[in-house]
Amino acid sequence: MIKNMLAVTKQQELFPFMLDQESIDNYVQYQKDLSEWKVAYQKYEEAANANLRVIGYCKVLKDHKNFNELDLRRRTEKANEALQTCAKNLAGITDQMSRLQDAIRIYNEAIIAYSNYEETS
Image (cartoon, rainbow, N blue to C red; front, top):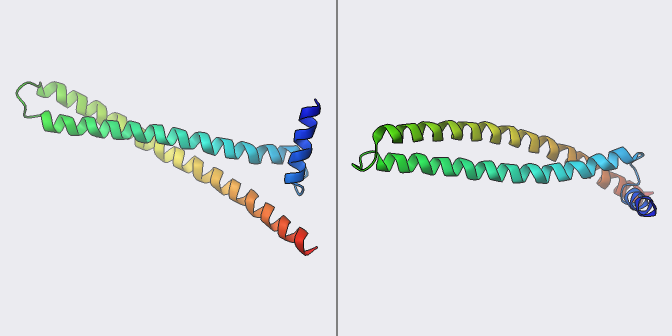
């Protein structure tokens, strides 16, 4: 309980212009969420690159006599579908990260504006 009270007091010192704990919690949560979305973005990007490699391998092996062309077509089709899914998810993640960055930027601008106001007062 005392630890929580100290944490709240410290946060209020860092964010003196914010009137409620909810605003502070939102600011911190936006930063955590952005970090998590960046990790998700990286994973989808890696998956997209892996599917691009599969497509490339299938193109190279298409004329090789030891590989079944029908199997390569199936693999290429699956890789293309997965690549489209990755692209769709990456676009959604990018949109979400942009929204979070905008929200964080607004909070940061408010912090700077308040700090400048305090210095001139």
